[in-house]
Amino acid sequence: MEAVSYTAQWTAAARAVETERESGALFEDPFARALAAPRGFELLEEYGGGGLLPFIAIRTRFYDDAARAVLAETGIRQVVSVATGMDTRAFRLDWPEGTVLYEVDHGGLIQEKRARLARLGASARAERREVSADLATDWLPALAHAGHDPNLPTLWLAEGLFFFLTEEQAGGLLNTLAAASAPGSRLVTDMVSRQLLRSPFNQSFLAALKKDGTPWRFGTDEPEEFLAANRWKTYEVREPGEPGAGEGRWPYEVQPRARRGVSRSWLIGAEVTGA
Image (cartoon, rainbow, N blue to C red; front, side):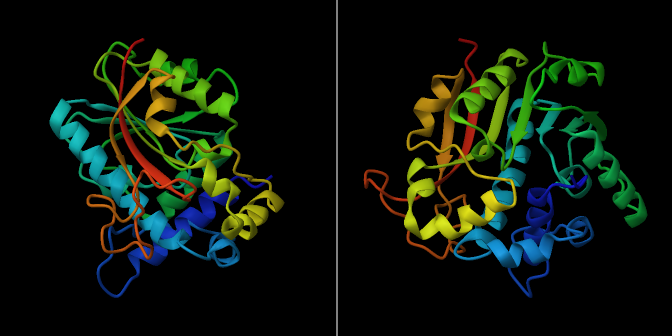
């Protein structure tokens, strides 16, 4: 097993492609190309039909904007990136003074990422704390050991994660995050619709992911209801191409929410309910 998952590699490659656009890039990630090694661009070419590249670009910008907005509006100063992969927000965004950013992932990836960023001379713009943990086990003690205080509000970032889980695991993770969340805690995440997993237009992409050992398993056509059932109330649910979510950059027409049978991706902001 490679230290850096295939998903982390091709996501970094997609961010590098966006960064290197001649004009109109939604963000800049100067570290992405180096973090995509060894197979990120190869995998991206294998998977990269349809809207994959614009989706990663739009999603990345959505998370960037959402993180900035939450910290500005709420005063939250502890941020936890769950299954952080090769994300570099700690290094490329400007964070309010006093922000502590925890990056949770398995130890091999964290070590490899640290080594690559050191070679690039990257410096974190917030206090960054690495948390080596297996998300399939009870990982909250490792987060607490790193200094996370569940009595203070937290911004959780869970990017590109939920579709790799089963429905039961997805609900379990939402409840785990809620259990470690003080009132006022926020979550920024993304999910796909159940229909996206069923659509014949997506089967070659999904088959390639499955072949490489990273199948997509979970989708929901009603993200508001799913999060509410697992202790989170949504305050923002957008689809790529809508205002605030890559308007003008999504190559497909955004369909009315009432139309059934449409493949959708959800970009979500939520607040813990404590229920």
